[in-house]
Amino acid sequence: MNIMYHSTRNNAKELTASQAVLQGLAEDGGLFVPSALPVLDCSLDSMKDMTYQQVAYEVMKLFLTDYTEEELTYCIEHAYDAKFDTEEIAPLVYADDAYYLELFHGATIAFKDMALSILPYLMTTAARKNNLKEEIVILTATSGDTGKAALAGFADVEGTRIVVFYPKNGVSAVQEKQMVTQKGKNVKVIGIHGNFDDAQTGVKKMFNDEGLKAELKEKGFVFSSANSINIGRLVPQICYYVYAYAKLMAEGKIAEGEQINVVVPTGNFGNILAAFYAKNMGLPIAKLICASNENKVLFDFFRTGTYDKNREFMLTSSPSMDILISSNLERLIYRIAGNDADKNKELMAALTGQGKYEITEEMKKGLADFYGNYAGETETAAEIKRLYESCGYVIDTHTAVASAVYQKYVKETGDNTKTVIASTASPFKFTRSVMNAIDAKYDAMGDFELVDELSRLANVKVPNAIEEIRTAPVVHDKQCDVDKMQDTVKAFLGM
Ligand SMILES: *Cc1c(COP(=O)(O)O)cnc(C)c1O
Image (cartoon, rainbow, N blue to C red; front, side, top):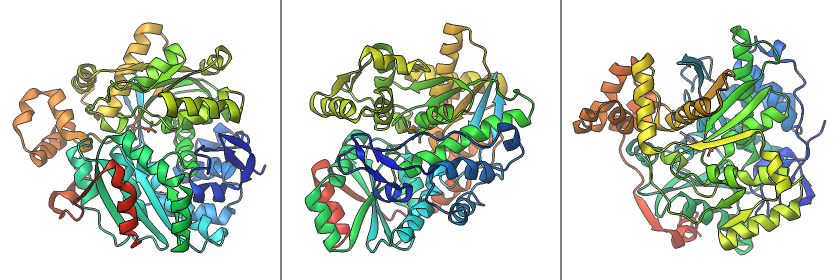
């Protein structure tokens, strides 16, 4: 089946997969969605002996239908290679009654690597297929992890440049160091005086600025996105849910067809949307458990049907989830509105105008598969400590939010369905918060001393991504105000 893509705000204009990957965001500000969700056409039983790369091919071929088998295989083979520190790519670890799907074994030790390792290949392949003449400028807003993963993926990739905006005071020490030490002649990293939502809004504004786009085109540039608003980010994220299921079958933990629950620590709603897509493609998932930190706008939404971003933005120990405008929720809203682009457009206009919208009773029914809850800072820290003390397994702060929410879910419902928790970052990326959660005495130690201590405690080798930044020189020190983001991009492009 040939899958085409259109905007969540306009059903009429169709693009091929490669065109949607290239463009990133639709001209009307909407997000690209597939014309229909494909169904898995390879049995789960036959996938249980497949490698990660093979499963990825089976899933991605269903969405990226204008890529040839040769092209897609090339992208997959180059993405999921020795950049990952384990051949499994995404190992499952059993700890205290749940399966932690470790998505942080890539180059930058967060789950963003799962998609951003392949996106540059998908994008440069798309550029070739569509005879694109312009140089691609990737504009990226990051809450901490996307930035580094996108930089690592696009650094020195021919025909591309990348600009990353991160909240200057809103990321962890390791996250910042990883970004500001990024080498490459086509990269630019800028700390903004604002939060992630400011960064994302600023970037989306540039995407939708027709005047700016025309100016760019004249100079031989075209914008694209590495954020999860790009369908080329979302599709690779579906693969690991299918892979995890096949792995559980292979290990004899579940029977074919047995339902599992999935818990996802959520910010921009990309990762959990990928799980939702997987479910709708036929993967036996019962509940999609959406875990938030103190920025619990999604918890409130699932409870009340009203999405309301008018609230205080909280800085937490899980900075990659410090988000009040979850962009990918738009893809779900569109779907539960019965693929009604006008209805979706109306709600998104209300979000931009009043900062909130309310869905209809009919639409609420479409949320039945979701369960939302949140974990505060104390609960998150307590969960890290609990898991470490009960089984010696050390998780990062984001995964701890998910794990704490899972505990609440089980207590509330008594549901003992086998459960996969998306483990989205290595604890080494948030060492100070993780170590302080285990024991307050660690607060006195220096950043890298703590890294070594965590390595001893968890009995895990210090990841390369951390070793690299111990001594790496800072090469980016630019900061800017939110209203100067566009000027900064132009200056970088010599315009
Ligand atoms: C980005 C990120 C999240 C949130 O994922 P979304 O797809 O934005 O919901 C959770 N944890 C970590 C470590 C992340 O980097």
